[in-house]
Image (cartoon, rainbow, N blue to C red; front, side):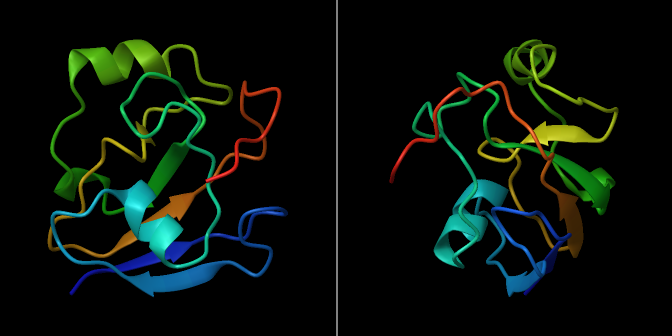
Length: 112
């Protein structure tokens, strides 16, 4: 199964993380299932940017972002050409390295 390496983030993963994820799982779900507390204010439906990640390695293995996802990413803080909404990016067979941006546009962290 593919491995997701999470680069260190001061709140979500201070020491970084290395997790195994089943293909077909969203990056967001894989992170949450492995105690990486990434924000997901819209309930993982791609309607906000709080779960924005930058896929540093393995980006090409992901299915191309939809137009709706790209429109949402235009609103994200710190967006790059390797940015994805983690709730919409589905793990394939390749290993991934992701960076969670230090900031999001969310003013209050959601629970659950």
